[in-house]
Image (cartoon, rainbow, N blue to C red; front, side, top):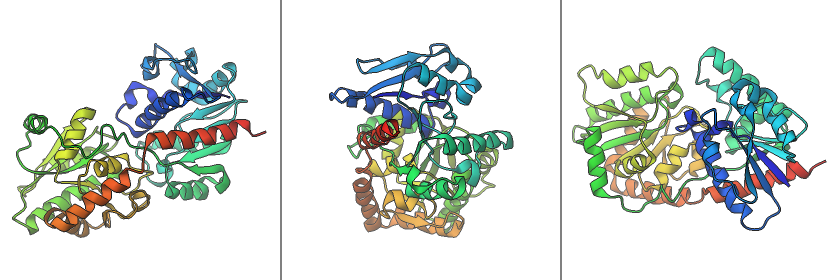
Length: 383
């Protein structure tokens, strides 16, 4: 069987986004699978002229880079070019790792719809969100099978996109445990990073794109409320991640304390090496999101053994296996209380640390790739 892979998500401009990480890790694991002697061959589309990182992936005997000039034309690729290229390459099925490319053409497609945020909680302008909804509905309609990363997302896909439950398979994302693990961090490296970022105090961490859906303005308010209630706590709040759509209000709240306690540090985009150090050095990780399809940042924090608390919403209790401490993301008081309990309660901190590591260990990219391949083979062999 020959499986084509849409590499649109590997564009260099997406390097800080979850869909890039997802595709990159699956490609890595698919290459490993071909070395086991299975009867599957992969063709990853690539072009050296459009800033797509697929061109940097080394080909192997059963994993080839398939050049396509159509990939240089973003809209053309997403509105039929990928399907045309898959047919021309002789593929039996095409894997579309995110709902941004319409699976049009004679080759059956398997599309990953990570979540339905364009419908439930748009994260872009009205124009961009409208296009995302159009592509989302097109992927749901024209794909032979759909993969999603949580049962919560599957429920939303079935309800909001009108597809049958049988069409949607839940395949949990993985975690890079070679990077994100509980091995002791290099204290000298952490100290150097803290100096570079101006971190003089213990800190609470959130990592991920800064945008309204992440609920960071309420996190800032809850953080400052916690410090006002407990003067024995003296911490900073660190946001590590790129600035997303409509982030201005969050940035203003971070920079303008109005004379109140509680400094917020905008670390911006950091390297993977620095991110691991930031997570391991944090007193607490907080994921206050209003809606998530999986939440890699949550699993990464858990895997590093950092006490983690999260919203009691969308897929977060499901993916974390109820192993963490939870709060109502709309309640600043409840969020503040949960943070304080996790920071001052030694028994709770240890429980969060141990339960988080155990739960995170279940999410591997090797398992994700094998389960994804099972869906692809089934879709490619069905009449």
